[in-house]
Amino acid sequence: YHLPRIKSDHRPILINTNPDLSLPKGRSFRFFIGWTNHANFKELVSSKWRYSGNIADFLSDFTSHVKDWNRSVYEFLGTCKRYIMRSLSNIQKAMDCSSSSRMVDLEMEVRNELENVLNHEELLWRQKARCDWLQFGDCNTKYFHSHTMKRRKFNHIMALHISSRE
Picture 1 (cartoon, rainbow, N blue to C red):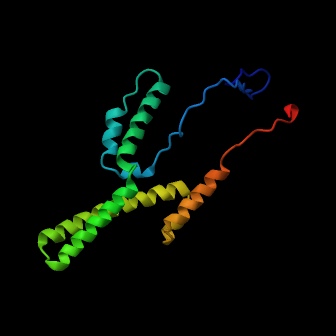
Picture 2 (cartoon, helix red, strand yellow):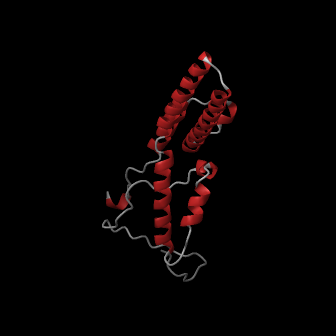
């Protein structure tokens, strides 16, 4: 925390390096831009954004609600994509045998659902990789995944070296 100013306009910072300090467990909370495109996210925020009392407790509760919602909606994005692709394939096979207006409507509905899942997947990888190459048509998921993993590897602090305490 900041110490009081004494003779300068600068405020010194006191850092407690107590090793008994408990660190938060798990991943830190990150906002996913794709949430704003989901129909239920605005409703979730409206129902859970009720601040009163301690801001730290409120934010902790709110982020846990958002994480739970995220798990239920986005955890199985790849599985959902495979399921929709299989459904689309089956519908198109059925349309090859006999085409009806109901099958055409069903195909359009499944295509829209697939497009939505693909857009969310693209947003996820764009945000994780911090790349803008997607706008130029380079959409190799394996490439973006490896780029993300490499960046994550170099973003870790393994140790701090203090010269006076070797």
